[in-house]
Image (tube, rainbow, N blue to C red):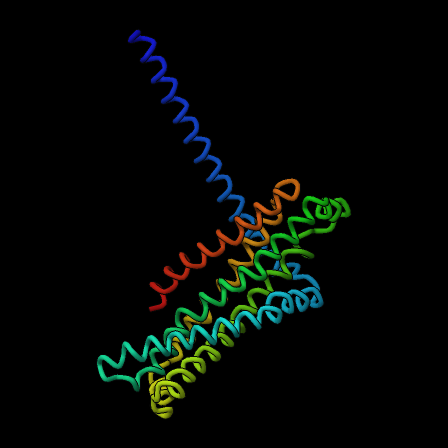
Length: 268
């Protein structure tokens, strides 16, 4: 009986070790494939960036069509910051610093992150679904059969468009959010309008703007990278595309937040 129990314990232990090994090897393989995809995409941007027409088309899809959700989110984010910031600063008699609090919060942190998350939900998911459908319908295989590089026509235009569009959308987000805070702080709560903008102008420096630009640019790379990668290697059928789209949105959102922490620690 003891030998039988020992045999089953060893069997279970071996199964656990094998399962852990398979998961580890699969994870390392996926990380390698993902890293290769990014490096090859950046290489293709330099070598074969794609036609300007395709780049402009993707800029319209990623940037222009995201304007409404960006403006709406920015306005209410600024209004919330103005409302919460006023009651926090009022405890210390520093209501005049409201403009500084709103501007720095948006320019350094909330503007790039929230703009990227909104674009991820609206455009990143669509990028994955588009390329995934082309994968399962064998359109990508047809391009490869005709000796045409799919990266030139499908991936690099999206990368370039995302890297250009995200900083511009972030700038719009910041401006709209600042005026949203002004609307609540000045018009609703009675903060001095001169103090609102004067303290903002005095406190916001180029390093703050530079930090937001770098973040939004890198977030654009992440959105295009994960969206294209998940679509390019989507599984078979509608279920594979839906799973790839879900994984793309979740992974991109997590990477944006993680990368935002590391960039903040470096750029402070």
